[in-house]
Length: 265
Image 1 (cartoon, rainbow, N blue to C red):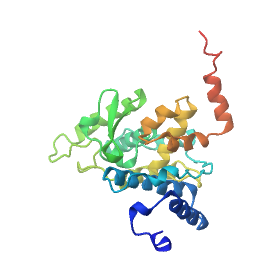
Image 2 (image 1 turned 60 degrees about the vertical axis):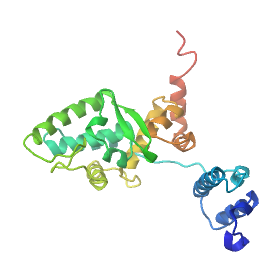
Image 3 (image 1 turned 45 degrees about the horizontal axis):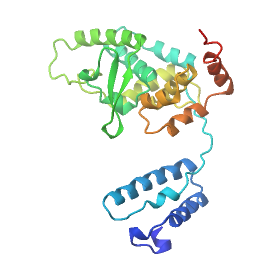
Image 4 (image 1 turned 45 degrees about the vertical axis):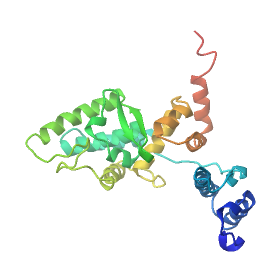
């Protein structure tokens, strides 16, 4: 942008320049989602410049967000989830750990990096403290079923590491007592997905578990604002993409559950 418009001073940048820049990006075939992510970064940058008194006004505030196309997020179906969970058993430490990790991804919607950093002290009676992006803490609930898995895992973990030393203080551990890696977590899911015959068009990853969690919560009646907080999104615009991915029949089913007359006492 500076090369084309010969702008070298930040205070000379105005909304017209930014709009011309985005028009160029659209001509290059970049998506609306990508362009909006750039606008988000520019808004933050110019806000910082105002705070440092380099400029007085944020030129991005007069630039509209690009209208994003409806994104259909494909994820696991319920049968695939059941088959993946059933692949691992409670027969030994590794299988129990893998089953609990998989259940944690599916029942909390947390990111791989977030599970990777869970320490023992983060596990509470009814919730887990998650250290998310930007060092922001949030809570995710421990459902009765997940609690059942965690109790079994904790018991077998205590026995497995009873006589071992130098065990790291993380909740999920490798066979040597070290913190699990993000790669190992992905392998756990891929292995279960392969055995569960996941559809070819579905990417078998921990982030797809997050997609499944979000859509399942919406189908079961959770509002988009609460879901946004559970997922650790900065705003609901990201969370709304999951709502857009629901089928019309899912929306009808949700509205039946929340019918004003059906819920009269």
